[in-house]
Image (tube, rainbow over all chains, first blue to last red; front, side):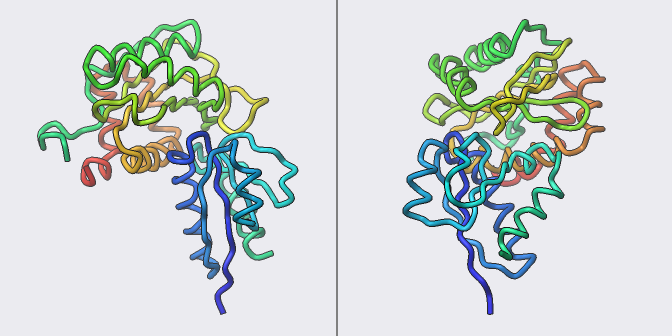
Length: 97
Length: 164
């Protein structure tokens, strides 16, 4: 049976880099057989969205608070390529948790 | 879609500044943004909006070798799709995206002007793939010629052309 996980993706405007990251996170989910629902938000909305969306994981391209009560990963590697393998592994671990 | 077919490449030679000389990130953004404004791509509010956003949400990317920055802002400041590209003679410091303590010595600046969010996304996906190839970034810095720089960039932004 497919698992479903919720991932909140935060960036400055909730559009540009968050969409790039959200697409990548859903692709990773597909590769490991986990259905990923993503929601994009602005960094400033992250805390409120964690309350309402109740994600299993937050991936951000802007600084967000670390005390959101769910794992928070920096998604910039999807844009720079630096550390991309570790980021993918961290996301896989979080999606399988 | 709004652009004639012969003119659908993202990077125009007259929007490439190489070599670009600037004291800091904001001067580089201002110089590139003025080029976009003069060519009718953006509103007068564009440069101040990009700088304000850059202060809050930095766009330097710690790529391997040559480092880059992708300053941008909301679509309401933009009139036509385009990118201004600056290749600096000596790098300027940008904040690192996603890391308030980090900085990046950016030598290539892609100032993005897009009228629709979905265009920005496709453009960013293409740029991100290109940024992950250190040799392409080296090549862009090495050629020092706006015509060839535009050609290299456009060859990596094909999907954008096909979609738009």
